[in-house]
Amino acid sequence: MTHKKSIVVGFWIVTALFCLQIGFTAYAQLRLPQVADAFTHLGFPSYFRVELSWAKLVGLALLLAPVPARLKEWAYAGFAFDLGSALVAHFAVGDGAQAWGWAAGTLVLWALSYVLWRRLQAAPDSASTDGFPGMARASRMGA
Image (cartoon, rainbow, N blue to C red; front, top):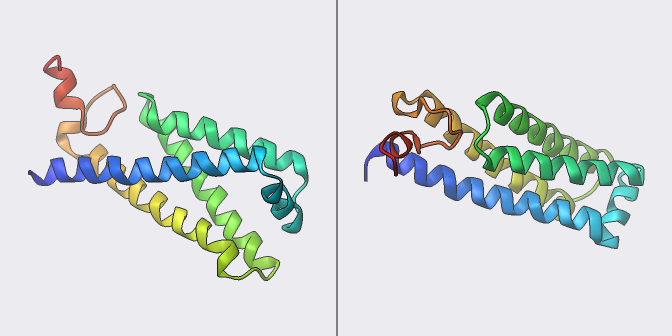
C-alpha cells in the first residue's frame, strides 16, 4: 500500500469513528434525560443543548458530503470549539475524568481526522472538486 493510500484509509477510519461519536452525542443530547441533566449541571440552558445537537448534525453532513473545502474547514472549526468548550465547562465545575474523558477522546479523533484531511488536501493528487479526500483519481478515471 502506498503512503498516500494509507493516509486515505487512516483518514476514513478515524473520520468514521469521529462521526459515529459525534452522531451519538447529538442523539443523546436530544433524547436522553441524563444528558439533559448533565447540561443543567454544567450551567447551560436547555435550548443550547438542542441547538448544539442540530449544529453537530449539520457539521457531520458537511464532513461526509462532497462540499467545498472551505465548508469542511468551518465544520472542523465548529467541532474544535464544541469539544474545547466541553472540556472547559467540565473543568470549570470540577468534574472528574469520567465526565470529561469522552470529550477529550473525541477531541483526539477530531485532531487526527483534521490533520489527515489537511495532508490529503495538500497532496498533489487531491485537486478534486468532489470533496472526498483521496478520491480525485477515481473520479477522473470514471470509477
